Each structure stands twice: as structure tokens, then as C-alpha cells.
Length: 388
Image 1 (cartoon, rainbow, N blue to C red):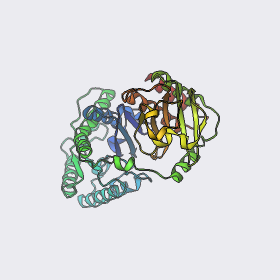
Image 2 (image 1 turned 90 degrees about the vertical axis):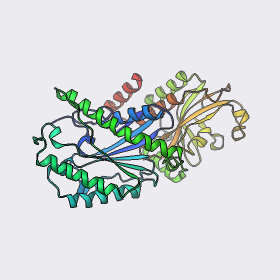
Image 3 (image 1 turned 90 degrees about the horizontal axis):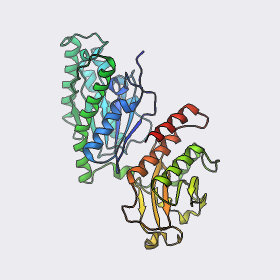
Image 4 (image 1 turned 45 degrees about the horizontal axis):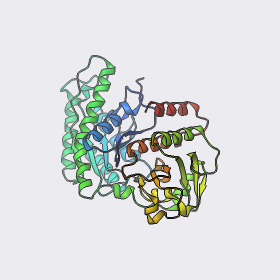
């Protein structure tokens, strides 16, 4: 059997103020032929989108090789999707191969798009990718220009007609596949072509939405309830737990690389600021009223306080002048705390590398997906962080 990605279905491209994309579907979205999503569509899409926008990019993927259009809506994640700027739908190869009638395709695709619109932000864009000619995929045995290819073209035409009536839905033709003589090069070129083509469509959509104030950022940066946050922290089992090297190492790295006197990974409940990991001058627990991190998690954006002595929100902090924190989120987008650095000396507003701070915060989030005792995953995560 050909390999497919078995790592976490989340890919990030460095940068601040990231755009968020969900890749949903089967076929090319599955990532056949590579072992990690970074080498499949999500990785290429994230990197190219970041290059085009000048911002970071977060790309998640929900893919199932057994998905068909008639049951695709049942595969949508059982959680809110309102934080995504773009949802990419890649479906149809299996339906083309089975010669699904066009009227059934239209009905099921309409049902899927309705379901996506119901769980995403009203400002989100949907990109429906066209079905590539089945003959372009080795192993299917389809004849170029034959019956199956012609049926894929019919389904694509049906898709274009349906999506023309939906203002937030955009159709992207399947990209041309590069020529390659071996399977490894063919897979690499195929996913690069898909990722680049999707990014070229997505970039102007997210840029326009951001410029017009229609971005899904309003949804994902909205305040969250204490109850939801406390429930997420409880599910992780980290509160009042012993120190763990995996978190301590990241916090040490943050303090050293960002050149501050202290750093911490905090958890913020409804009445506590408790630091899971500390480095330097930071304390284990603080009164919630004195918490910089409690302010950080009010939105999904990083918080920088150049000089706390000149900020009315933090006048009770004589020992801290400079603070920079980045929210820590669960996979469901719940902000549970922050990775922060502090210093007794003030800095300018540009006194911290926010791209690096975000990368370190994402390293913490990767660790949150690993349960204690899973040594193989922990070693992989440590290796990824050390390679950065």
C-alpha cells in the first residue's frame, strides 16, 4: 500500500497575523505517496500562501480516502469552523471513477456546500477544486480522453454551474500535473502544483477580506467563555501537574532566543494564573488580577507591552517593564493560556521577534497533542523543534 501522512493534520508557515485554511476532501487531499502533511497539499499551500500575503499561514486538513460526495457532509469536523478564512474542498475523483450521475453530483455537492456555509463565518471563502483527469493518476488505468476523463469533465462543468450561484464559492480548475519519471518526483511535483494553484486563488481572497474588514479573524479573535477555557484545561490534565521537560525546554528556548530575563507557559482558568513551565525570573503562580497573560488570551493575537509602567492596565507590576505573549490554543481553537517573555527593562514596540514567538507557541501547541508516555511522538516533536 502506498504511504500517506500519519502526522498531526496541521501545518504552519512562519509569519504574524496568520490566515487560516481548512483543506477538506479525498483524492489529492489525502496525501498519497508522502508520509507527512508538510510534503502534501497543506504544506505547499501554507508556504506559498505565506509568500504571497507576507503573513503566516495555518492549514488544517480533514481527508478520508473513502469519502464520496454523497456522504461528504458527514465527514465535516464536529466543531466550529468559524475561524477559517478559507475552506478548500477537494472531492470527486472516486465519483468520476464510478460514473456518478451528474444530477446526483450536483445535489450532493450543494448539500456539502450548504453544510460548510452553516458552520463557517459568513465572511469565509470556499474554494472547490476541480477533478483532475483520472487518466493523469497512475494506477487507475484510465484512458486519456476516454469515458472516465469525459465524465470528470462533465462533473466539473456541473460544479461550475452550481457555484456560479454562490457568491462566496469559487471554482479552481485542477492544475496540470508535471511530468516525472519516478513516483517520488511525481508525488512531490503533484502536491507542489496543487498547493501553488490553491494559494494563487486563496491569496487575493484573504487579502481582500482583510482589507475590507470582512476577515474571519473577527470570529476567531472574539472573547471566549471562562467555562469553555476551564473545560479545555481540565481535559488536558495539566493544571497543578509536575514540571515536564518538553515544556521547560521550549520556555528556556524562548527566554534565551528572545533575550529576556524570564519566560513562562501559563494556564489561565476562571480564577487562577498558573505557570506550567517557567524560566528565569518568572513565578509559578500569580493573582489573576496581576496577569498579563489573562489580557493576552482575550483575543487570538499576540500582546506586546513595551513599558508596563506607562500602561494603566499593569500599574501593579513594579518588577516587570516589558512583556510579550502569544496565546496558546487547543486544536478546537480554545485559548487556554499563553507563552510569554518578560523583562525588567522596557523595550520599543519592535523589541521582540513575533514570528519567533509564534513559532515557539506553536511548538507548545504541538506538545499539547502528545499524551505523557507517548515517547515516539515526544521524540519526533523535540526533533522538529531542535531543527528550527
